[in-house]
Image (tube, rainbow over all chains, first blue to last red; front, side):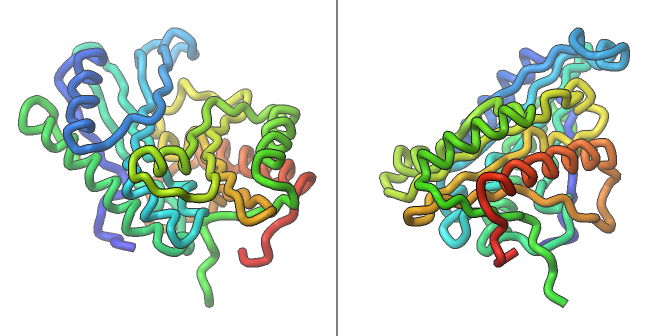
Length: 140
Length: 137
């Protein structure tokens, strides 16, 4: 495990949620990544804090080659796929967070899982970095 | 000392389709909501033209999970919904899910860890009824 890599990467896209989502989807597609599933949450459905936060989405991002590589040795590796990308609307800007799930726990990963997870997280960050050149701002 | 695994495995002595049906029913009865399913084997077959044994990822939430609080704790988003991997292994079925372990040098993820821990305990309880814990863990 590469402990030097950040557990959590955050970005700010200076666009409203809907527009930012279009750019993020395009950027992920350009990196040959799939959005396998998507969950939509409205700030209006939560308590007072949620109403202040606004709407957000959870994108489940995958890549079949990396999924196949991960499960080739041990099926348990599939617990880390797809990767979750949190996209939160905040008035005129959108915050994007990508956490490496493998880094949230101490312990031994399933055999063969580490490299594909790293590659998937890396490709998602590359896709968001590509946005950074245009509009987004990397926070850390 | 050998590091503990990050995943937990249960075996169900039923073929894949029957075990998957049984698991869905048992999780629903335990208030674990399955909000989606990803057919990994189908994805690999469709994209890489490779035939692999059946493998499905169930996306699980506790019925009362405070999802609207996720933006407060972005690390929680990495674990929510929790993935339950159901995979064929010959005439039997294996089920894998993440096991919460204490992390050092990690950002605080206490709210999500608490919620994920409750969900994991519920999944383990359900699996303990319909299968048995793998001794390889």
